[in-house]
Length: 355
Image (cartoon, rainbow, N blue to C red; front, side, top):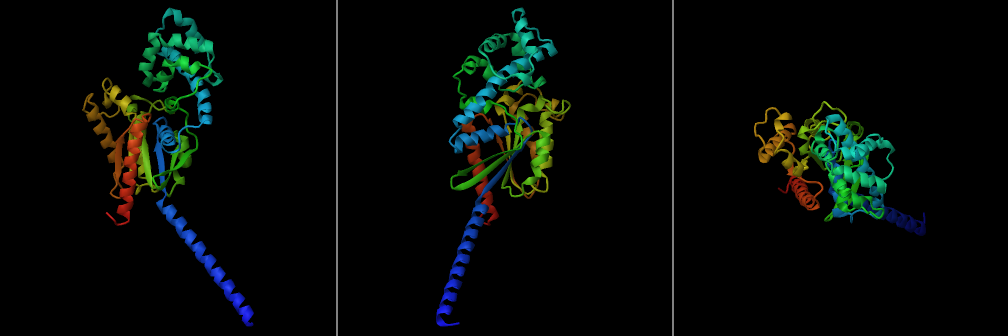
């Protein structure tokens, strides 16, 4: 090979070497980004408030709800207002709560509605809903909603039925936060918390959804487990024999000690604390936990439930942090996630030998 060929070969070799170095550098950067990526898996039973947390993250870190989101919730919220009245009218019939005579005709009309066939909220229907909602029997039904499957937020929409029935109605952030749409599959959101990329994944809370997805996550930074702490006197939608809070406790013990997650730090959100503190004044926790002896003291009840969950997830190789939350309160959730971020940073420093 002559001098010219030798120079070309050397040039080609240097270019290849430079390209390899560039690829190596890009891979190192990518690996560093992966190491710094925070992956959070949100778990809990159905209706615990997981999806509401995801909505709050949209508000806090993604600029809030888009107009297309509001249009989607427009139809759902209006339809739900009709469904809630149907549920309560049927509950009145089942439990013997007698409506005022003037409302009997409207009640029969709603009792015959199949919820699967409800398409929209008409003005005339809204007027009937407004009148029915003033009936003491429906107030009794709402107060006893734990005896049948009525969302806690149903009163929010029924109290404001005139606004919701307006054709120009646009759902507020509060309307959307309170709106229940069961999660099927995965609900994922990615954003930057400061300079750190976060990905938060919510798995559907119904049993079938959990079984389908639970073992597909092996790169989780942190588990967030959401407990509807107010459900100590309620039964599962899927199984009328099972207490909801006990189901949540069993699921937490099983999940947190799973081979994929047993060494992962965990944050427990004892959610719907506002509803719990109101309910515990008249309902005894020992209907869920027979060994509870704290009476109607909210603080004693909270400590007792917290201890039950800490015992269920006890493991020397990880930490469990607890927070009492109200997922519909944006300021509360902002403060809680700031605390979660501090926990993640401290854990990262500890694992790196800096603490």
